[in-house]
Image (cartoon, rainbow over all chains, first blue to last red; front, side):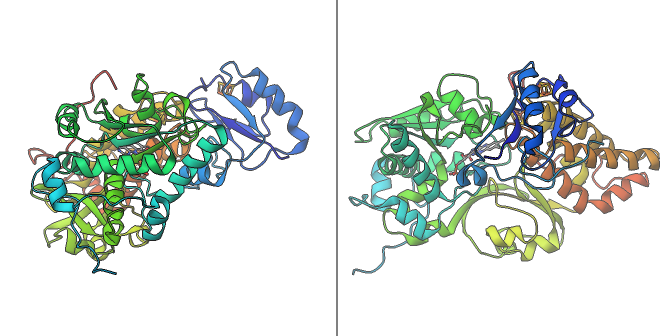
Length: 95
Length: 402
Ligand SMILES: Cc1cc2nc3c(=O)[nH]c(=O)nc-3n(C[C@H](O)[C@H](O)[C@H](O)COP(=O)(O)O)c2cc1C
Ligand code: SF4
Ligand code: SF4
């Protein structure tokens, strides 16, 4: 099963620990909030991702195993050009 | 078969009483397959997102069955959009169509409680109109705060549960866990009223929509979807641009707006959508940048401030637009402001718990596209609509409560 990272935007306090522990997948924007790389988590990064999830002081970083269902995806439809809090969008550089 | 039933618009009744409602629209017939009706008519929600109603009805019914819980239906009449009045007008003119739609939807998904959420100023009057209804389960009328975010469905569910009207994130969605943790169907009041017409056999009910028109005056009318926008909203030569959808919507140049088809595909072809049904014609003697800057200032102040990118991005975007709205300033500084706005816009889209940043950025991007000439005039030290030209779009002041 493929996994994805997700940030809970309300919970996230911008501590930035996640970007330190998982720089391959997480960058910080100019305000210190995480930007996630698009797509599924590569299998080789699962351990590091779990560590980042566990280290988030706000418990705002999640690994989700099941991609959102079709209705949820439609309800969440967003302009696709930027990285969002789910990884369904293409990346956008932080600066 | 008898002749097809006559079409009566949502606002056809002369007064909001039950007697006049029944005299105008006739009684509801017995059993209907609401999901099939909505599906065949192609009804989509009138709350802004344009989501297919049949799919939502099914999702709630399925979620309830899967979890063996009884769902709740909430009519969303909070209308936080300051430029929209269609829901308030609908509730004051045709509250019984909304009530019937609520009960029909409740029957379709197997709900046992029905809630009507309305702005604080309307709760008493709507409650009075609905008091005499012969329904088995009474409608609970809940007043919700009249601020911009209160109508976002997760915020609405929070308010109905007695909490603060703040978005709580889309996971899990309200159709899985909403009011009291139960699967919850949230529909805009107009969507529900249209179900009440569809259930009477008025097939064309899904093909019309309520719009709030801002020209020299403001009014609410029901118009056919697919009409030429210029036939619905007068766009004479003195109009430079039209705001379509509302404060999460898009500006269109007048020439483009006049000929666009007022439906999902027509509007999508020019990057707009019907949104909250607002159509506002900006006359040529006003400044579109200044109008937009005021609105975006209001939107930024309306942010719940819960999500980092929204909390940090929207006020910065608003401040930069405010500067761009003033004539003068060094060209290099103005160019930098535009770059900042573009970068910050990219950083907020898709990164909030609700669609507020996305909608705000949509409006900003359309303004920068459409009012390029005005921006150039500002750079040259001149503004079309500088004070004392009065402001056009309504912008409330945001209290500390938001
Ligand atoms: C910031 C924000 C504000 C909203 N305000 C309203 C509103 O005032 N009234 C409304 O009906 N829907 C509003 N919505 C949309 C609701 O979340 C929801 O999609 C809608 O009520 C569903 O009804 P429908 O399926 O009939 O369109 C808002 C959405 C957002 C993101
Ligand atoms: S560690 Fe947690 S709180 Fe900090 S930035 Fe990452 S997700 Fe947000
Ligand atoms: S995106 Fe903005 S308005 Fe929406 S919940 Fe987050 S902070 Fe509030």
